[in-house]
Length: 377
Image (cartoon, rainbow, N blue to C red; front, top):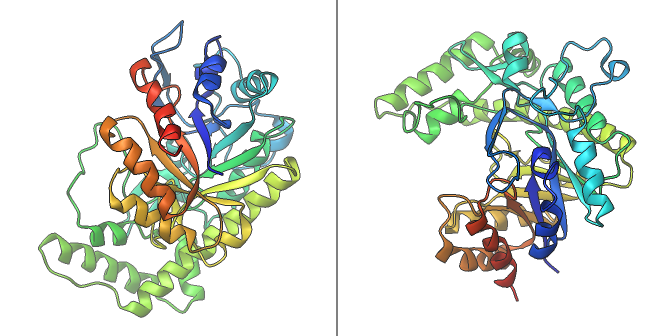
């Protein structure tokens, strides 16, 4: 049986009496609501009172309880753009009261606000440049923050499932303010610029017998060679060690987050945003040797309506966990590509679909969600 969950933000649910009815009309099995999220300027075309929400920084959409965060270096922001400090909790109650299962959507290591305030725990590339939007899991403070964030997101709120995004390291690629980086680097240069060189990661390199100065020099040379159409990649041995170091930090982060979630919400299943490419960074981090055994399902990016998405699903399915395909009805998705796209993903091994996005899609795209389901009938 194939299931469908629709994604939403708390402001999509609250103050809109028609939201619950639309979910019912679409025949969705559940709704995945953001409990912690990064900054966004979000359209709300169907909301009766507004057209936009400017979420100016990453925030926890639950009360920030002093006792839970006492003594921590990193603490979440409060969403002052809402009339409530418990946007997720109130949204979850609205949906639960209507008989709709709720999944908590938790974004973990993506916070420009915290990366700017505490640059020592942000990802840093081989040229010494900081990525403030990306918190590096090699630091204990980041892992502690992520675990507490996940626990507090579901504290005292019944949820059917937890969906963990950015449960690992973000890298070079990021949609920022007036982004001017498209096409600047080859895929290989992007890979090497996404290797974190912060103090925490360098400590891990030393434990593996690597010289940090030599490693960063090798990475810089690889990036510069790509820029002039040449190739000077790190040796296979060095690349393997760098990836192992990243995966070790990812495994530690995920382990601490999962322990916190399962204590706070012991009956909730856990879905992890992940990518079968082991080098992947970002919202969907590369799958490690331990990933599949520790989670209940793997959610993979499948927005492109091309064979690339089906290949991603098929590779993820090889890890032996249910595969949740993340699909969108927003641009550049074309109406005439939807049915074939969904059928191709099922043939590749997807048994669940996460639909993006119930609040962002205008009325004329809302029926596309139904067509996704109907394509499998």
